[in-house]
Length: 196
Image (cartoon, rainbow, N blue to C red; front, side, top):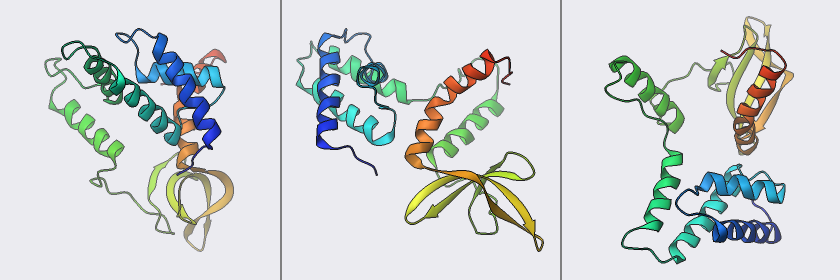
């Protein structure tokens, strides 16, 4: 796991605390704090180790604040927890069990529960998806690091092998990319492309 130096962590902590001290605790969420601190510092605080660090600062701040009869602190913590929960389907919306099962499968996939079996490539790496007949997304281990590999494959002796055309992202890079997807989709729409 990557880590920032003490000076960077101190700057992050001071900025997060400054934001929390002047914020309305009834409407502030951890996500909003992170976004504001990220803007002030010019740092991406959505990467895993920084996100966890911000969470510890927020939790420490909340723990140090007086509460009114089970009040404010619990409400803010509930909001922090609520951000992390995926939207759940309303049971009475008429969508039926099929939608619930699909959502459960998606949640299992997100949690990495191990319930899903993936097809494996020639190297034994799980194939997460095929982007085209020659491009795949796989997960692999390399020098002790987990990588998300988006790569072109070629045929040789009846086997599909990875080419040098592609990119392998560390988990932290993948998280940064994943968090940028809404901005990428907006840019595609602005350029006249369509997103299904």
